[in-house]
Amino acid sequence: MTTSSNEAAFASKTIFLADEAEQLALAGAVAKHLKTSFVMLLKGDLGAGKTTFARGFIQASGFDGVVKSPTYTLVEPYAISNDRMCYHFDLYRLADPEELEFTGARDYFNESDVCLIEWPEKAEGFLPPADWICEFSYHDGGRDLTILALSDKGRELMLQVFSYG
Image (cartoon, rainbow, N blue to C red; front, side):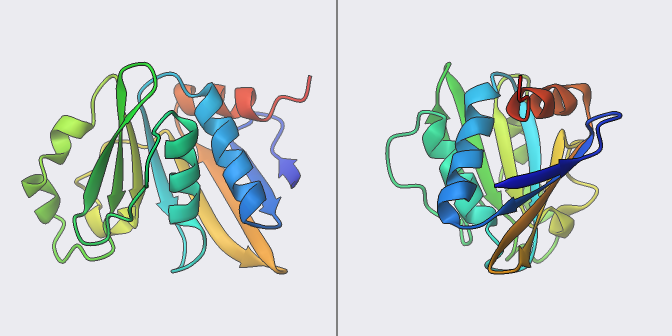
């Protein structure tokens, strides 16, 4: 795993992930440090690694079971550590952003739970402000992941995950 960053505000970081194992390790590191509510938007082409990252995060957060892709259900709930829930959204098949309202999504965006949202652009205007935007792309046999921290919680998590001291 190689990294580069904007040291000034630590609001942006790009990481090269050589393989799935590195992607899962990073998701695990994020899960280890995330102890609060959080909204993470996962962007990228089909097969870029969004679901793999979500699966790694959910399992590293304490869920002991199979993590299913919510492509057809739009959202899958998972009980994770510290009596929290992680809601994994996959909005790829969302035909109209208003459909998100019918899932009861507003209840999922709260002060204790984590929401991982794949294909957030399908529901613009219906999602709360994100703490992180994670953009996955193919690069030289691996993946580039650019993380943008958009909130104080997001910047704090970035500092915790990527501190080398």
